[in-house]
Length: 231
Image (cartoon, rainbow, N blue to C red; front, side):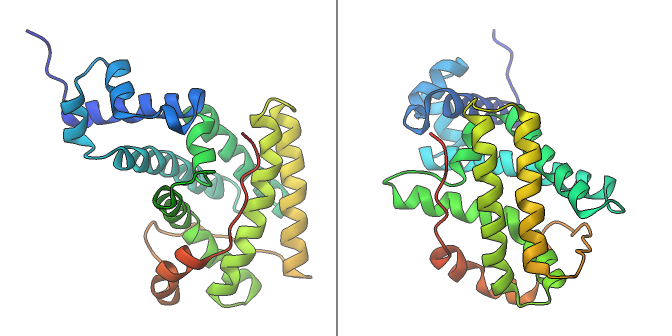
């Protein structure tokens, strides 16, 4: 008789396998049948844990952003007294650590190139949830409404992602990509901040401003499209 694997353990196994498929072969390869075969389980078992393919993909994204969010908080606690440039570097390093740990597939899927509008909407919603606490930080730093900080944050994030694309594609080494991303993000922060210096503090997970809670659905739906750089 085989050993019965606890549902939570099996769920993590399936998410990990789907993440590997996503990174190595792209989103089209992430199918329930393929994940089941590679995990050594039946399709019905996968469907019991993930009723749809999209539910599985969302779980992959949420697993990635949960890991990345934890790394962000750790980086912030370690570097609260550091300079803006040093703190930015710790955040960029946290992104690289997450990509190395979980694969580049989930990172790229946060801004997918897909003809499936439902998938794009789902990925964007997960990304907005990841950035939500940092939007509040930026709003406080710049002294602007949360809605304005949202768009500024997406500009900064797009620049950082574009810089890391060279590393993901194997064009530059990680150290070079981190340096370039730090310079770009720091320059943008300085430009939007003027003569001020940002004061960033850890934000409890799930704590959003009232304005942010009201505006999230609309912003997630109508916010600026950020083109993903890379394959």
